[in-house]
Image (cartoon, rainbow, N blue to C red; front, side):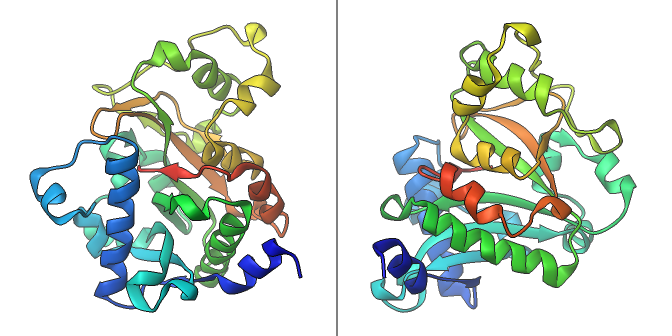
Length: 266
């Protein structure tokens, strides 16, 4: 058995079962987003060493665990936050709605879920870990009949001119269909059309995107209209959507190629 096979067989994926495991996921998020990536915590977050908000109380916390590290929260090495439509609507809002007008998604009907706060421990950023995580997401999608996934994904930095190639590529080649296309809120809207389509090298532009964004696109994902600067997290956000009919058994291969450095605070 290869080292990758051994790692894959050791890792587990499931929803958080108790408050200790949720706290461990929040602590992992803090280490990555604030300690590693330089996001700006509130005083309470810094005191607790924890990334948290109101959405943590209503979401499902998907966890990747390595039992070799111990039991309970000590085993958490990866996390994703999942909010199904009925849960978000009962709560009155979605995280993404703080940056994007998602009224077209809401009006479309059907079952959808919001994804966010994705991160993986620095020692576990391998394709194998993401295969395990996405196996968990795929099972969740199938169990709940989810038809569309969406959420904010992050590009590093807050200067759009430094991201002109990436943003323009997403705008010209991966814009969502109009009937489900989110649009950045007017007061936050940053134009993504910063370079002419014929000036871009699509292959190079794709290669320059963060691994998580590349993974979404290789699953057939789309992006919304406009980017948003997130000064707290020192990122530029785009709204990404994936129709789950496109999430097939091949998803693991997509992520095996792209998930070497996976982080996305939004």
